[in-house]
Length: 315
Ligand SMILES: [Fe+2]
Image (tube, rainbow, N blue to C red; front, side):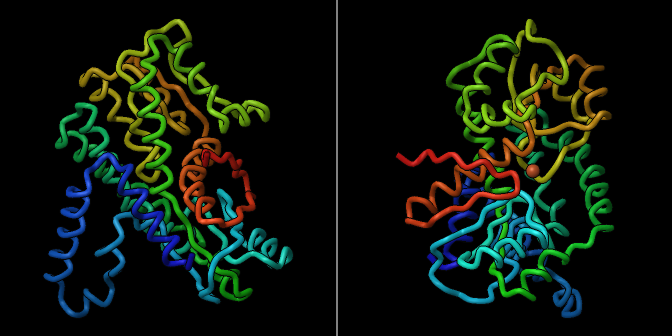
């Protein structure tokens, strides 16, 4: 497979597992196109045209030094110049695939956060409430990212002629869909049942060995789960803590997330919303594994690095 084919496969897998339907995503892209067409020539120059075709702007191809048939891929959760050097040292790496965005993808992280509104709406939070409360948080995330040295890793890849791309939200969508299907099938009643269910997943089993397994952040094992939501795994990064009160009003009992700040935790506690934190890098690994399985099916060799725990589900 060529790099573009691998990238398009990731985007398509992301669309298939999105909270939104394919038609809704097409409409989302069409709205961006309408907006683009209304811009002046000067504004068009500044517009990121990838937004017209890629619904996940936090996932990109950053560098193609040699567009060849990809046979060996180094896959990691965070790729920094150290991993680029590692690939060079190994010598036979055709492509690096990161999970977390760098460069342009990182600069556009906030762009995918709208997806959280659709996820919240799926679980019964009115779309106007979700959009209203998320807007403030999306702006906050966009400003927060502003300070980072976006291009550091991309520069290293370019200088050392290493092919580089990342798959963020499509992989997080796959992890969300996997966990959502599991929860809907097994219907855990108590938080202890939910914890047992998560602990059977190989990525979490592995995380337990290093002390990073699933944890109850709010609530206790004896609590009923109530309605379980998977609103915090995909859609860039943590949403607004102000949403928790609205989620409880919408009948939600438990959130399964990847990570949670103290501010968010306090807010969840205040409204008696149970919070189970499945684990950050382990959940990132789960999503990446579900995508990487597609590459394995194509005969591509995978070398995991940077926290990525590889478990194949290819039969
Ligand atoms: Fe992550």
